[in-house]
Structures are given as C-alpha cells and as structure tokens.
Image 1 (cartoon, rainbow, N blue to C red):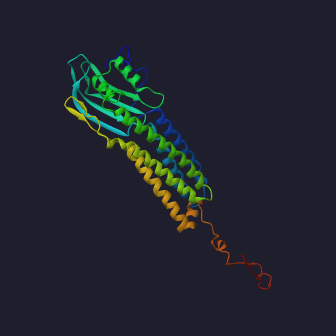
Image 2 (cartoon, rainbow, N blue to C red):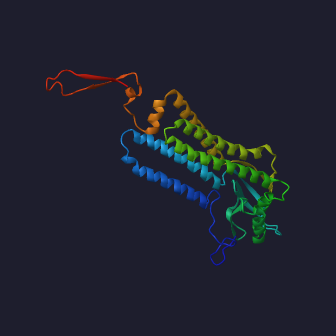
Image 3 (cartoon, rainbow, N blue to C red):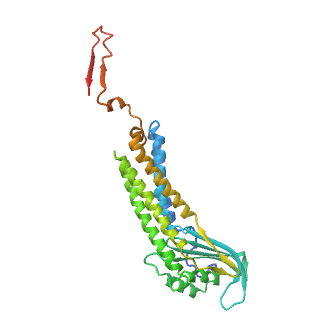
Amino acid sequence: MTLWNGELPFYPQPRHAPGFSVPLLIVILVFLALAASFLLILPGIRGHSRWFWLVRVLLSLFIGAEIVAVHFSAQWSVGGMNTNTSYKAFSAARVSAHVGLHVGLEGINITLTGTPVQQLNETIDYNEHFNWRLGENYAEEYSEALEKGLPDPVLYLAEKFTPRSPCGLYRQYRLAGHYASATLWVAFCFWLLSNALLSMPVPLYGGLALMTTGTFTLFSIFAFASISSVPLCPLRLGSSTLITHYGAAFWVTLATGILCLLLGVAVVSLHYSRPSALRTFLDGSVKDCGSQAKGNLPLILNNPLHEQFGALDLTTSTNL
C-alpha cells in the first residue's frame, strides 16, 4: 500500500484501530460526562452519605456504560497469527505479516500488518471493516473490497464470512450477534428501570429488576457462545491456521452480568433480613428514628426548663 500525492489509496477517511469505533467513543464520553457531573456535586453531599452515593452512582454508570458500549466493540471473538503468505492475486510475491481477525456483534475487522511493515516497496498496513448489521449488505462490501484489489489474506478471511460461503460463518456469527445485541438492549431497559425503582421506596422491585438485568446480560453471553457448539471452518493462510478465542468484550459482559445478579440478590436478601441497613445504604444517611418505628414504645417528652424555674417535674408520656 503506497502513497499517492500524500493520500492512502482506497481510504477516503482515516482508519481506526480494530477495537475503536466512533459510536463506542460517543458512548464512553457520554457516561464519562455523567460521572464527571456527579463528581462535581459530590462535595455538596454531607457526612458519610457522600461515600454511599459515590459507590452507588459510579457502579450503576459502569454497568450501563458496559451494556451499551459492547454493542460497538469488535472484541467479542479475536484471533491472530504470523504467517508467510501470498500478497496479491496473479502474483507469486509473498510477504511475512501478522493477520488479525476481530469479530463483533455488528461485523468483523480484518488487519494485515507486515513484519516488517515495509515490504515489496509498499507499506503493508491494512485494517478493513465489514458490516452485517441491519440495513447493511455484507456481500456488497465484499464486492467493493474485490474492486479495490485488497491483499489476498484480507479477501480470503472476508470471503469466509460471505453469505454464500460453504463455511457458514456468516449465518452463525450474524445470528449470534443479533440475538446477543437484542438481549443486551433488553438488559439496558431493565437497568434503567432498576435505577428508577431503587430511587423509590420499593427496593425489593429494584433488586428484582437488577437481577433481570443480569439475567438478560448472561443471555447475550449464551447467545454469542452458541457458535462454539458448531464446528467452525478452518482458516488457513500459508502454513498457519488462525484460531479465534473470546475477547475482552465477551469476558467483561460476563463479569457485568454476574455482578448485576449478585447485587440484585444482595438487595432482595437485605430487604427481607435487614431492611433498615438496606434503607440506610439506599438513602445514604442514618436516621435516628428507630424508636419511633416501633409503635409499642413510649415517646417521652421532657421539659428542659423545669429545673430553672423550680417547676414540677412534669413528664408527658404518649403511646404511639
């Protein structure tokens, strides 16, 4: 890939790293702005309640940001290998390069980086993205890649994911990605509901909503992991075979689902075992009204001025 008048061929726009996308950056910036706004008002909260709100809000923002951000990540299934392979069609030239495959819920990223980068009088550094999200045509994007004359390793891997490929990778990964994405959006809706319910005097239902959030998050994991039950087509380049494994987005989503389940179970358990402690954590303050909560205890009101004026020691006792 050489420069022509200072421009990279085939790339009208700057390229980004495989795990980077503009929607992902927007999601991160939005939730960081919410967290920063909360930290600005945090000094105005008095006493120990400041730390209660800090843990509660930041933990909730992390869960919400993770559920949304992984939709746009290409790190659900990743693989890479170093190989010596052919470079262009109708050419016997071979290059030594690192080939990477990054699969997300909405498409795949294929990278090709020469080792060294400068070979055959060219800069071998490719990063191609192919979408299969709703409204996108993967076959058309692959046809455009053929017209561009992209290197053989990129076209080989992209062809394995085409709808007409006998490997069936397109059907497996596309359906798994769609189901995982749908369940994650349901989990996000229950996350919003859990925040609303936990802000009301109904912590039990807030805990149940949080448990449902974790359940649907784990459903997305099971949906994407269903592809592992089907034998996948081998991906061979030269004498090497590319083997994929679950990436960072998969494991972070799994951890978030388990975290939501544990938090939901804790809220429901505290609601039945120690409701006062749960109320203290959710309200962020300790209320000195424990004696008033029990109607059988007397409320004693003493007059502090009776000693100054020599008045009778009058005590008023009222049963609530």
